[in-house]
Length: 87
View 1: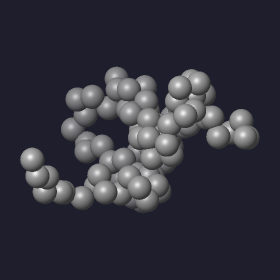
View 2: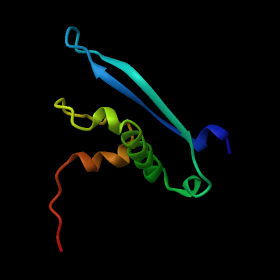
View 3: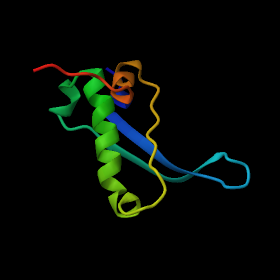
View 4: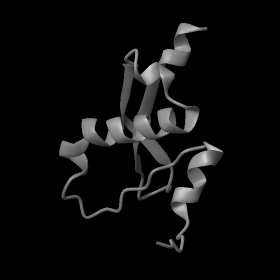
């Protein structure tokens, strides 16, 4: 398997007030541990989101600006919709 399959990453962007475009502020990437390499793909996508939020916590915590998480992974889209859960 290609070594690039064992790395996850994220980009922290900020929306420009003038042109409403996203501009990158910081990048984050990390190699997966041996245990993380065995995760399913949806869990790897979630791992990247959680680790990026932890890495940039000092910038994101306490901000008045809403934080928006963008992903192109279809399996994670169900988290963006409200669900009625049963017991």
